[in-house]
Image (tube, rainbow, N blue to C red; front, top):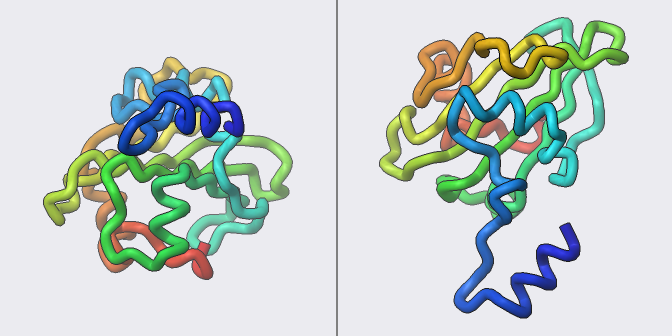
Length: 155
């Protein structure tokens, strides 16, 4: 991502927008392929560790917009903020799925966030279990957090 910073420095006026290949699509039909291509792997990440709400291990990736917002302690994250949670089997050795959050609007409503869950990483084109704005099951767990995102120490 270092080259993207130089392009922005040389070419952008008034700020830089992330490259489309790096920004996740808030579209269930496209996100599986984006994840399979590993675009999120260049983002900031947490170590692989056991889950707190499931027997699965997890590693969470944050794009620059969300990472910066979390570091500053913002109470509202910017549109474009995104996180990818990779889910691994109970021994932490095999990727078994993804859970993704992308902020797509800034109205203060749960529908500001696009949620996605897919548990067949070898088949990114199969329909996800979740792929919608304000998904009720996702909002139910995330609604107590700051703008739907858990604090860094809880991840």
